[in-house]
Length: 215
Length: 215
DNA sequence: TGACCAATGGCCCGTCCGGGGGATGTTCTC
DNA sequence: GAGAACATCCCCCGGACGGGCCATTGGTCA
Image (cartoon, rainbow over all chains, first blue to last red; front, side, top):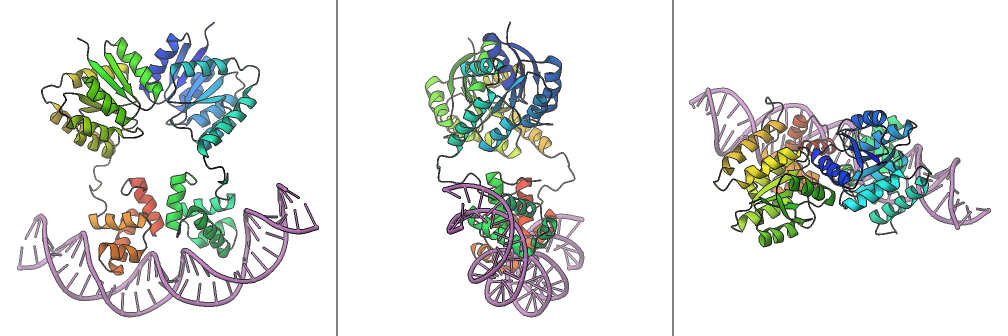
């Protein structure tokens, strides 16, 4: 019995290529989705053994789709597809229940191997796999181990996000129920950590680093 | 005689998929490159009829590689591959000498058709094609035609870019050889146009709109 | 030619921001 | 239980910032 695979990626070019490659490898590609919502729908309808799920998709991203599919008590395993190994995204994907990830720069053989591994994972080897993947991601993303895991404190991040959203010091203060001085202290700490000299630079740097997001 | 194609994309997954798809369509995939430098080298060595060239690649991006290949007096035609239609990037690709572009969300048939069209373009239909493509890009990027072509003045943009680069008012002033007051006047005008109330918001809005770019 | 606008600049003002002190309490870890 | 982070707050100060009002110089376009 062939392993049944669902492809979810918003680029048809990649889907068609994967379909051909996987078919030649003996897999049964049962469906294709070009966004997260469709992936969720087709996963419920087709109950594939494995979903190859791109992270970035319109309507609903791959991580959210993974969360929903994994939350629906099916045995479907999910492998994330990413352009580049991004620590934060992958960590979240794993928390969402992904069984593994594949960088798009890998060969058909590697994809086939990963799909077979994921499909055979009815015994839950995923916690172990997830842990080793997280290690790997850390290794990929942190060539300098002296660097802290968390550059910015949770509280500092809250302040920074509000600044990025257009709030002034006093507005941030009242939103977080703290004094203006505390906000300024957090900001001062942020400036040091992000090597910025004012809020404009701090927000830009945070955007570059993916700490805050443009609304 | 089959059309000879070179694939240049840093994601092996996509390359292998394209290779299979194009082979089935009767094309001769003569080589694969995973970065721009290699694409230039292989294009010179293999003299393919068409190069399918991804825009974003390590070492050297696709636009630069296109410029070099087109500059080397070969008849090789180049089709750009992009994730999403981005006006600026595509316009530059066309200036660099690309014969067309393909969004990665297109079918094998469309790819095949585009490759055939590009290969048959020994008579230079490219100027016309380029023009129509530019129109299309503009249409894609400008759903609202009431919008002004230029929201921000050239001078205002210079000020804004320097602010985004981390300059203070006085630094911008001395860099542009104008007084601080003039910089502040420009900024005031920018705030009005971008619906921002301070430089932080103005810069963020400009980044969203693609007016300025993160360094 | 007169209307308009971009670009330049001056003076003044109130507010905001960044940074310098120092202080308290909690929550961890070692 | 000592020490390190983290989060909270105070006072103070100089400079940066945003804005109001107005003026001059060039273009462009009707």
